[in-house]
Amino acid sequence: MFDAPCGDFNWMRMMKFQEGFHYIGGDIVDDIIAGCNSKYATSSLEFIVLDFTRDKHPKTDLWLCRDGLLHLSNSSIMHAFIKFVESGTEYCLVTQYNNVKINVDIATGLTRHVNLLLPPFRLPPPRARLQDRPVGEEQRELGLWSRADIANAIAG
Image (tube, rainbow, N blue to C red; front, side, top):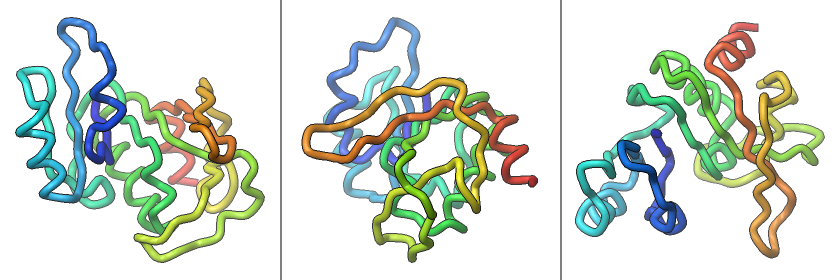
């Protein structure tokens, strides 16, 4: 699994991975990745400096992008999707907000919620949905899409 942005591995470090599972955490912040490598890196847990909107994604079975897109401009989100499609990874699990009615564009680095089913993204309904609502935060979900779903949406 490729997890980008992985941040400081705060909640993922509590996961119990099956034997043979390989995790690659990617983040743009050098110091965060250095800290993750010094605290958590093993033969099955790897951390790399990577900008998932510009750099090549490693090919894995799944790209997890929890809370990453809400900090990106619409253009940067499209670039992230292009990198995902180019990677050959079959599925992505991405945070999205169904309650958003219009995707207001922002400068990358700011924050807003994104509904990936609406323009300019127009993804099809997710193949699966996982409710993801931390205490005190708005309702959101992790939607599962295939590479073909994303490729078709960005081509259209």
